[in-house]
Length: 269
Image 1: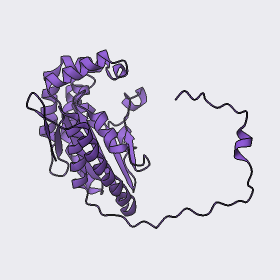
Image 2 (image 1 turned 120 degrees about the horizontal axis):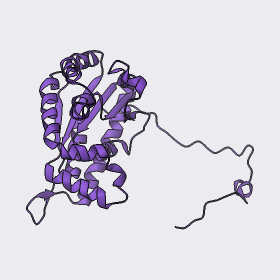
Image 3 (image 1 turned 90 degrees about the vertical axis):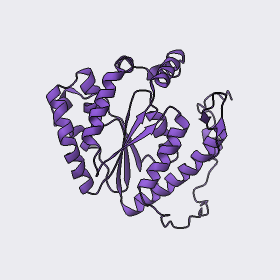
Image 4 (image 1 turned 60 degrees about the horizontal axis):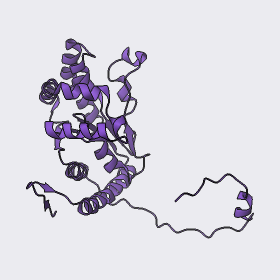
């Protein structure tokens, strides 16, 4: 893959080159989608990482050209009072994939190892219990035939600050800056220690963590998709040849006349 050196000496992809590579990888994701449906595979991809690490953009790059019926995104809000009273994993299990599905978790049960631990939403015993039991639960998931893939996106301090400041200045992105983001910025080292404990306890042979450097968003997206494709063996699924049938004239009428006088939106462009 060709690279472009900027004035500071760091390698950055040109936009055209990025879009060209992304298009190729998204075409492969479409092939993977067909294969997952054809073989009835069950795949689960977990995205975790620091705030402003680029999880949302990476997930969009994966899902924007595929069917939401196959690539199903799960981004759960804060638990309700009822969910807080349930077994911790219960609210996540109901979203696990059926045959022919790839479920992407934009944050997951690992909330307990990160934000819940750092912000005091769980106690020390609950946190320790989670880290102890999580590898066994994930072993059960994998043994049940689900392909489980876990990604951690890591962004540096300076780049995270730059992205937060950009959100403050940009009205289109201000909604992405929450009070929790500000706390995660303030408590950088607490989140670092929580991350380290999580990786040490849950980076298992059956469900390893894959870490993505995400200071360069374009490279992170391409590297993630390329790696994801490498983890799931797939081939071109057989598909019947599709041809448009002749359009029937039975019951034909003037479409345009029936719409005359209806409320069309103003055409400003």
